[in-house]
Length: 378
Ligand SMILES: NC(=O)c1ccc[n+]([C@@H]2O[C@H](COP(=O)([O-])OP(=O)(O)OC[C@H]3O[C@@H](n4cnc5c(N)ncnc54)[C@H](O)[C@@H]3O)[C@@H](O)[C@H]2O)c1
Image 1 (spheres, rainbow, N blue to C red):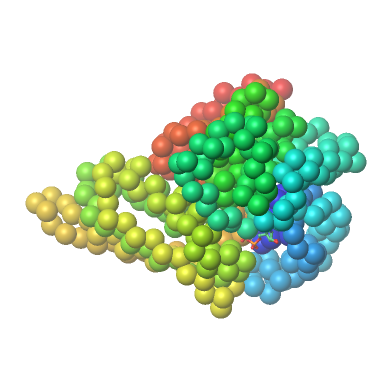
Image 2 (image 1 turned 180 degrees about the horizontal axis):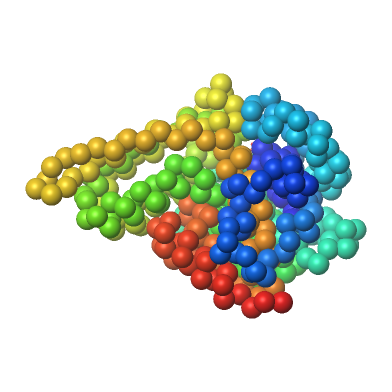
């Protein structure tokens, strides 16, 4: 598994958590693929996964793991118990493609491809899944900008100053035949030209933006209102978070990416316009924790007005990391099954499911389980 943003909170929790589960130090809580419907599915064994990746920081994985202990995300004893795994993965981390670096896109792509193939060769791997867990990039403006990037040639003609690193990485992976998964709201493979590349190369990809907190709850609760024919009048949510993600989302252009993926779920489920507010605030004091407050105003029989409020307190990386492991296993299984293009059955994991399939958590779950059940074995 090649993690972009390999030294971030999500990636560090993924590597440390994987080692802990495989060694039997921790249960599989939070891992969807550990549930009974996935028993017997042709997924790679958890113990068979090894990790490498790229990042733009030099802070080592063991150091990041210490920081996550101090933040209360990882148990204090864990970094020592999984020290060998953290060191091993850290030794496989290479310099990422920085934003606005000015490196010609083809050179950046070839450099990453050399890192990917070097990892596969060195570790004698059967294959690779590339998963983007890097800092959220500023949103590309929709419409004309996307249109200009409608062909592979146009993508390559653009300087990396305007083409985001996530898309260069998606290109690098798909071009080599490796599935690409976007756990972030960044552009990644979400460009017509990259969809074309995936089709041409016959490679699957999935995304985008892991659904781990407020939007996860929304995608379950909105379905409840819809099924009971209750009229949702407004839904307002405030998200407070710290950590690297909080700091990045304090920049309006990056927050715009996140707000965009968060925005579609409600109307997608309810089918009617809803007054909808989502705010994101960086509260450094919260560290790796996130609070979401939501207030739903709804109407029932005879127009009677009612209200639901909830508070979600999450350790974001602990929610995200097991899903990264699930996605690595599922994307690899899809590749083995010969699937290509956007993996709609993995929509269960994402705020903005590429490939469609709707936003309702219950339907996404059923689709995922059905799809896994139909994967050809061996
Ligand atoms: N934690 C969750 O529940 C959750 C849910 C959905 C999406 N996400 C997304 O996952 C991503 C990671 O979150 P996090 O909490 O680990 O953030 P983080 O700030 O802790 O980690 C991000 C990492 O990406 C690295 N990075 C920045 N630019 C890079 C580049 N161009 N190439 C390679 N690496 C680069 C940073 O140096 C850092 O190590 C964010 O985009 C976040 O929005 C997280």
